[in-house]
Image 1: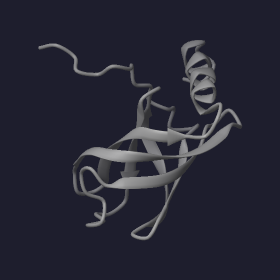
Image 2: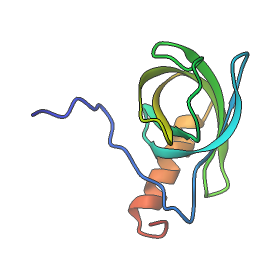
Image 3: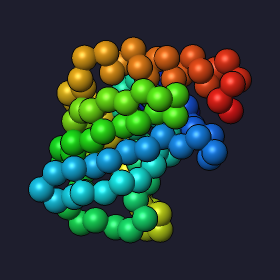
Image 4: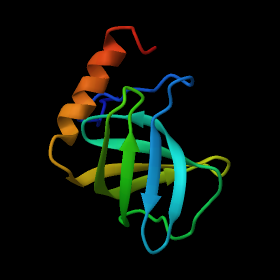
Amino acid sequence: MRNRRQYERFIPDQNEPIKIELTGDAINEKTTAKDISIGGVGIYLPEYNEQLQVNVKVAFKITLPIGLSFSGEGVIRHRSGNCPFYFGVEYSDLEKNAIEKIKKYIRYMQSGLGY
């Protein structure tokens, strides 16, 4: 079976979580990431939110454990689970330099300092 993913995912260390704030009309949550890549982020929520459906746009602020943060918007591409609830967001609009911040975090993870 071929991997459909365009970008490699990186799973944060449990002791150094990626923090996420979701904001919008339907949601105002603080949570953590399951994984992150150049193309998107996997997000945990402690409980189901019926407003978060596939193809719905969400706004977020991501704080990386290396002291960098960025804001943006993305589209929910999949969801699963029920406790915790998990969904994958593909970035659609990121603030300037966000990709560079993600790449810096990935280099940190690959160096072995963060995992």
